[in-house]
Amino acid sequence: MELIATNTFSSHHHDTLQELWLAAVYGFSKTKRGKAPNAVDRYRLRKKYPFPATVWDGEKTLYCYKQSAREQLEGFYLNNKYPTPHEKRELSERCGLSYIQVCNWFKNKRMREKEQAARIRLRYSQGL
Image: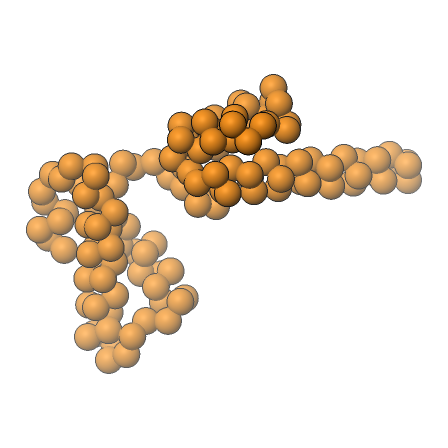
């Protein structure tokens, strides 16, 4: 772990180094506790031992999407709620997401917006 935390690496090695980091953290926990960590333990270990800056770009993720990707998707959504397949492919390349992730993001965003509008209409009709 110290080797990863104290050296600088090229960004195209970050995924592999992050896997090594987590394997080391989980392995340390296993030797300390005598059993492999379960899903909750792994979550807690990831929060307790985040990736060092040497193997992470520092950008926070929310629901698997980086802030920059969410901003690009939101910006596009404001102009066009129904992008064409070609536009979705371009967005996926720009955001670093798969085509399916972009499709699902737009579908979920439209559904959330529709549900929110229905809640507002219901409150308005009830006079709240």
